[in-house]
Structure formats: structure tokens, C-alpha cells
Length: 392
Image 1 (cartoon, one colour):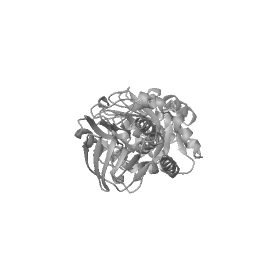
Image 2 (cartoon, rainbow, N blue to C red; image 1 turned 90 degrees about the vertical axis):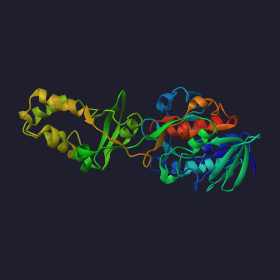
Image 3 (cartoon, one colour; image 1 turned 180 degrees about the vertical axis):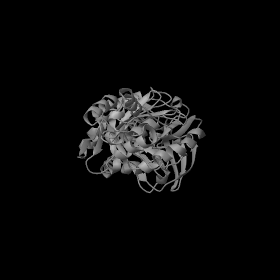
């Protein structure tokens, strides 16, 4: 079987690439080893798909080359994808911080992409694994579970290692190495952090306790968002965000009440409620179970009138700079994305084409470009897919 463009991977990047190439009149075949397309799209955003972020800029991405994403992101913006969503009559809303979600279901985004593929004449085959890829004079010969395909252009949109239960694999990295590309070390990102030993003992029975706002800091990076205690450690948006920057051995600090000045507040509470115990006062600023645990282990709890100014200010200071010793992450099983991947030094930033092998492209999560939580990784998928689809 012959096709102009063969795309491996029917996720966000692969489908966008297929639509863009198909609109140019190219014959396009998309293959995926999974039994259905867009599995990550379907599960994202709690089933409502956080499909982009209004504020997406290159500064919201991690890469060994922070400039690499600029070209693709500038040429396919959130506004471009929103226009596509509106063309299909999909209702959406901004949740917070520029994050856009479907009002109804992520199935609408997958349906939209499939309808666009159909309109562009794109063929899609699921349950179709890849057995071998080789270079030919005309392009590429790819042996699939459904037979051999000859293609002028080969686009690798196979994703990373996150969520192996959905079929994630290292296939894209292996293919990159086969053709001489460097692959930077990969690790789980946007992932819950784990505690161990005494640190886990202190907090594990607080599982389910949530802070609507906390600030997580590692090094020079800080993110303010919700935080959740789990049986294994810490999760929630603030933790998922910082996990992309935190590495084992790094210090992790939490501001448990970033919207308050707890030192001043505690002094005012002492004046207003001198007989109240510290643990019960703190329960007005923090979840009750957390406040009681902190007092039980670290602060002692006496009537407020027994504390000097300096003592209350020190309690406040510590709560704004609380140390946590994380031992690791929950790994790819629950990670939203994979950090690292195909080295961008070997790719054109404007087309995603290999500098080593003409006609070979890498797009989406398989590339060493990783976005923050909040729709940024989908925007990279749309932008990099569009960039490759415009020339492949």
C-alpha cells in the first residue's frame, strides 16, 4: 500500500498533523496500535478535555532548548484551535488561569478531529502495530500488523511513556535512535510526589485532606494552586506542576496559606480568643485534621494567651515555609506527560522534520518539549502537528 504521509499515532498531535496534511491534498494514513483513537484526549480534564490554554507561551514549556517551541507555537495559536472548536459548535468555558474545557465531553473534541480527518480524506487504522521501519529510495517502508506501507513522509506521533495502561510505550524513542537521533533522558512529569518513612507516617492518614490554595516551591520555581494529601504522599495541581522541576534530593517547600499573613492573623486571634487553643484557631485557617496534626507533632497546643508575639510569628513563618521531604514520584502510571525525549537539536523548529533523515518528522510528546499543567501540552500537540502537517 502506498501513501504520501504515514503518521504513527492517532492522538492529538497525530490527528492534527493528518488534518493539516490532508487539507493540502496529500494522501494520509494514520495508524495506531490502540483499539481507538485519542485515548488521552478522552480521559483528559476529568472527561471534559482541557484542550488549550489562552496564555500559552514558550515560557510554559520545559526543554533542553527553551527556544525550540517558539516557531510552532507562534504559527498555530490557542485562537486557531478555538476557531476550530467554535466551527464545530462545541460549547466550552474557561475554568481558571486560561484553561479551556468542553462544557459537555472530551468526546466532542475527538469527534471534531475525526470529522476533520474525514473531510480531508484521511484514513485511520486502529489496532495496527508497527513491526519494522526502513528507509527506501522513495521514502519509508513500514511493516504494520495490516501489511507493508510505503510512504514519502513518516511522522512519529507515538507519545511518551506516561499512562502505560493506555498503551504508552517507548516506540518513538527507539525509532528516533534507529535513525541516529539523540534521545534525552526521560522521566515522569505532572505526577504526584511520594513520601516515605517517618514523613509518610506523619501524613498518610490525612489522605483526602485538600488545601484550595497552596504554594509548592523547588529551587527557583513556585506554583500556587490546590494541594491534596494522598495515602502515598502529595498531589493536586500545585504538586503536579512542581513535579516537572523537582528531582529526588531537591528540597520541597510548601506555603500552606499563601493568601494570608498568618503571623499577623495569629496575633489578632490571640487578642480576640485568648482562651482558644492554637490547634482550634489554626483549624480556621487550615483543614482541621491538618491543623491538629501539625500541632500534635510540631507546635504543641496551648491557649493562645500563653504564646508570646515571637512564638506566634514563628508559627506563621513556618506554615508559610513548610519543609516536605519527598522520596520520589508515582511514576508513569499516573504521570500526565513524559519529560525529555527526542533531542530538538536534531529537528527543524519550524517543520519538526529530522535534520538527519529527510521526510522523517517527530511531533507531540515524543519530542523534548513538555508543557505545564492546564492545556499547554495539548497546545503543543496541535502546534507541532500543524507545523509538520504543513510540509510533510
